[in-house]
Image (cartoon, rainbow over all chains, first blue to last red; front, side, top):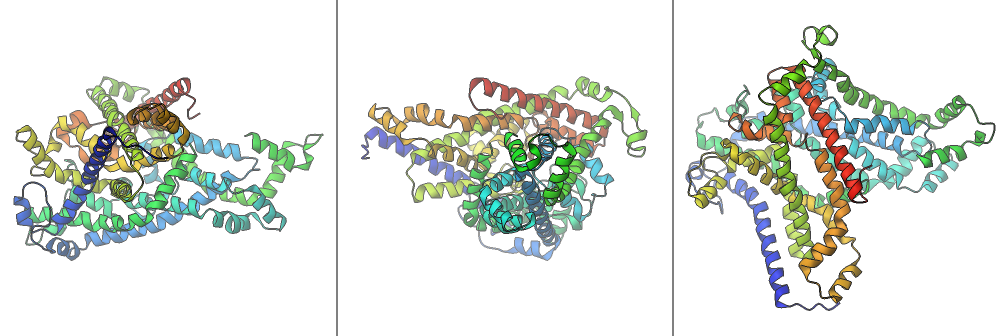
Length: 300
Length: 323
């Protein structure tokens, strides 16, 4: 259809484009600022006023400090372990649950569904949960980062929806050929659900990578801390009652250069160190995430 | 439910009279589906331990729980902790803050992605649109801790936002996170920054499935673009808006306390301390275990009531609802 563009129409378009450009700059600038600042000369940085349109001088001192002290590296290692093992457990549990819920002829399916649905509306709350974790030995060890978050009900239901979308005839045919239920799961359902599996995998991956609260509550030893919790101590030292304030930052900075300027510089470098790897891969994964939003919206 | 029943009847040849004994059906079902039941065991066990376990633990809200005595030995105190909370000095503060922070969130945070989707929907597909989308999705992938760290950096004494504010108001500000009057704007607008692009996806998806003939008919009638947005696009995506709105209301009392813990400090408790952060602080920092469990229980009940009410309103005023 041929469109007729009047002056009013063009003015309207211009306004929309300007709004979008402003929004995009607002979303981008803070990230760019952090990256520039992380390479800047710390003393000039502290004195600088206004926006940062490029690094002020060039130094890698902040990054050197981070690598010299190995607490952040240990944190990175812990995070990789928790994310790797945690996501594996997540996927296994979610596939098992989704498989059960997607069976069409299970006598107790509605009972199981009730058991699960109730937990989406009611919970015990933080304190009883914490006391229970302590009682069953999930305090201050590797498994306290894995088991309490082993399953996410939403993700399980999204995956069930994906499994249910597979035509029943395929399974029936496989059954007639003598395939067991285990075979049906591994040879029919899983290969046909790759897109859903990828989406859920990414959801868990990002969730595990970003998680810090459970670590703060359940972990005590510093050498078990994941990256995000160490970042929290370096970046967000606002809790007056926290006795551990800045001890991570402290270890990093307590060397000769313990000036405020370096303290600031380390913050920028820590952000870049922890975030840029993800922002680099993300554009390639974007389409899967976007697909995930669609998949998630179907269930509603 | 219906499908399950149907399949079960057609599936079992015994279903024709006389009706088989329930035990027989179950036995047959177990024989056929033993693999599925085997997989169900760890999943159900997880739900029982990690979701129902804490529910049982809620009874400490009615006790004076002492960790050394244990669950069973601690004394029952009835509603003492609930009354303490209602009569205590912080009741109104945390309730007010919880509600206001969420009113801000719904007024600005909930509408912003809808507006962005409306704008993006008017832009023709191309490199510009794609770039805008890729960049506005980006903050969604930054972890909450880092986002809050960035907020601390930009609102510090010499931070960029502090400087901009000084420029526009002519006043001399120190760290903005130290003013209780700034907490709600900082919390809300940083939330928009992080999620506006990402949350617009779902609305854009809904918009892309609107029947183009609606727009063509409107164009014949010479209706302007803003009017088309208002009278066609918005009503067409309203089911999606309603569902997400119910979720927003449902998560009202629980929402975002991780972020609050990362941003507040004693100077801003006045506006920043919400029920969930209060539970965390009293419970885990100050070890008032029973008291904070009681507060958490109240919050959970109110939350469920709100979700139920929102769903009821939605059901009455539109065809969309959760149940």
